[in-house]
Amino acid sequence: MTYTAQAVAIGEQDVGSAAPAPRRRPALSPSRAGDFKQCPLLYRFRAVDRLPERPSRAQVRGTVVHAVLERLYRLPAGERLPARARELVEPVWAELTEAEPGLAELFEGGEDPELGGWLESAGVLLDTYFTLEDPRCLEPAACEQLVEAETESGLLLRGYVDRLDVAPTGQVRVVDYKTGAAPREVAEARALFQMKFYALVLLLTRGVVPSQLRLMYLADGEELTYRPDEPELRRFARTLDAIWAAILRAGKTGDFRPNPSRLCDWCSHKAMCPAFGGTPPEYPGWPEPDPAVTGAESLLDRAE
Image (tube, rainbow, N blue to C red; front, side, top):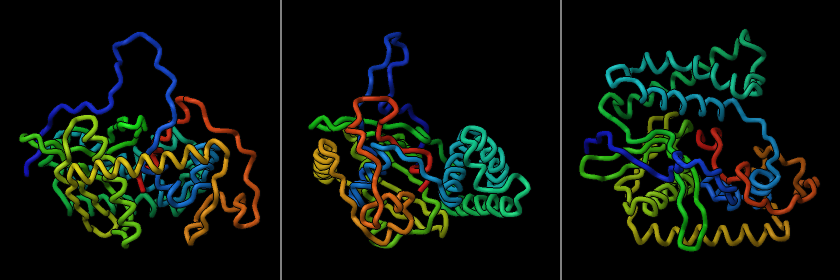
C-alpha cells in the first residue's frame, strides 16, 4: 500500500476564535488507563497527586528517538537518511535539556564519559528503524498528533499518535514506535490496548476504522501489526467506559488501592505505598476541570 500526504484534522482546536478556551475536565489517555489497570494507587500518584518522577535513561532515550523521527519527517524526502537521523540526535538532546533542565541531571555534565555512549545507543535504535521501512517513500499525514474524542457516554479520550499514514484510497494506518524490544504476551496486550485506543479515537472523529495498527520495536527490529474492526472498537469503548467509571468511584472517596506486583520494583513511589509500609500524601480530592490536569500523555509516556 502506498501512502501519500493528505490533510488530517483530529481533535484540532478552533484557533480563529478570540474567546478564551474553556477549562478542560480530566481525560483518559492510554498511559493513565494502563496505570489504573496496573495499580489504582499509581494512577492516583500520577494523575491526581501529580507526583514528580525521575525518568530513567532508557525512557529519555526513547523521547530523543521519537523527537528525531518527528523531525526527520519534516525534511525533504531525499534527506531522510540514516546519517541525517544520527546528526539530529545531539541537537534534539540539547533542545530537550534546554526545555527540561532536570534531564541533564541524568549525566554528570557534558563531559560525562557515559553520555557519548548513551547518545550512540539512540543512533543504533534509529539505524534499526531504517531496516523496517524507508522514510523517503512515505509522506505521513501527521506526526506526534494530539488526538481526542468523546465516547457516547461522555468520556473524554486524549493522547498522541506517533504517526498517521493516509493512503490515496482513504485507508488509515496508525504507527507507533517502541524503543524497547518486542514484548511478551502481557506487555503485548498493553501495547495493543494503546493502539486500539487510538483506533477508537479515529473512528469517533473521522468515522473510519484504521486498516492497520503497526507497532515498530526498534531494539530488535520486530513488528506487530493488527487489523481492528468496528464491532471490536465499539466493545473497546465500553471497556474504557468501565475503567473510567471505576476511576470516578475511587476519585469520590480517594480509595485508590495498591495492587502489588513485580512491577513495583520499578515504581518511583514505592516508599509511599502502604503495601510496603509507606504512607501516601493526604488525598487532595478529585481534580476539577483544569488545563494542567488533562490525563494526556507526557513525552516520556509516548516514548515507552
